[in-house]
Image 1 (cartoon, rainbow, N blue to C red):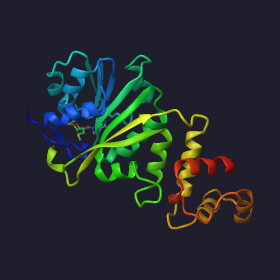
Image 2 (image 1 turned 30 degrees about the horizontal axis):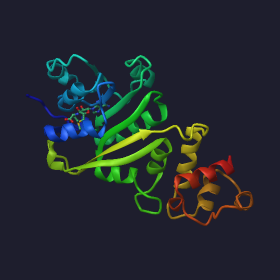
Image 3 (image 1 turned 90 degrees about the horizontal axis):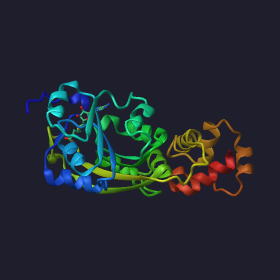
Image 4 (image 1 turned 45 degrees about the horizontal axis):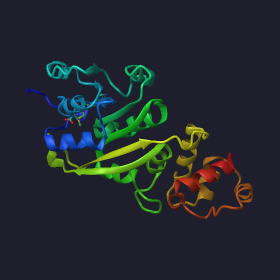
Length: 260
Ligand code: SAM
């Protein structure tokens, strides 16, 4: 295939069939599944998804890949050439007519976080996300409280689902080769905290971690514009001299519930 690889679209393609099949396995795709793929590229992963799933819908931003992808003639697969980040979530989900689906993507690094949050926060029918991301981002997603990698990303992903790294993928597996290694992360959505306002909790977590070296008391009082004495009094059951990074999700939720 003749293709002019575009750095601006994060085009680093895979071709190793063992790896591609392993990703489909990591995503736990079977014949009953609908799959949404973001960024099919030349369709290397799409072929295996199509073989194993009931239906695949794939969003690709690069129009120049249209002929290559359509020439694959994958019967249960629909390609849509537009920016998946800008596409309304209801429109994306309407491809599956109200049925559940699994998201699978070898993502360009620069859209990892916005795309992840788009689906975690807005999607109604997604049951799992299996995404190839930069190894360092994967480590932040699954980090344990108290470690340097633990932060807003970790807390928010665990608020929505259960995340695990399923494999590390070396940079040499991609063409052109990027400067960093990657990892596949699988996030199974859960509905544990549906009673909590997502946007409000996200904002609270950002405030807690706003200055990592500062105590919760400092970050909460400046971020929420609350008086320190009143906060200490109101939250007398909590040790506000701690830093946010030492609190796990459950503890952050407890704190959130006491404030709001
Ligand atoms: N899935 C292919 C593979 O594994 O070989 C390609 C992966 S490549 C890392 C990422 C793909 O995402 C590229 O084809 C790129 O053009 C596409 N892409 C980048 N930004 C996108 C966006 N906002 N919406 C849809 N596709 C996008």
